[in-house]
Image 1 (cartoon, helix red, strand yellow):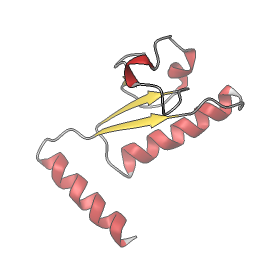
Image 2 (cartoon, rainbow, N blue to C red):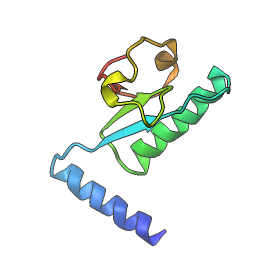
Image 3 (cartoon, rainbow, N blue to C red):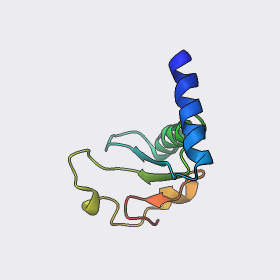
Image 4 (cartoon, one colour):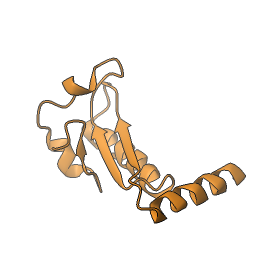
Length: 94
């Protein structure tokens, strides 16, 4: 817990200096249904926003870690409409 408190304090200092903190959430391809995928991604997004204090969060809803960023999220997915409090996908939009 002490490390978390120190990190939180450091992130708040950065925000006070008007430094943008960008977070990224990614879900690998897997067989779960869309409802489960949305729940897991929203949990990760909330952790990024409220624990790490990211000012912007971008999401890749279904990509492998080995896929280059410029090749991720090229297709529009309806799942983005179900995600809470995101700023876009890895292409900067959704």
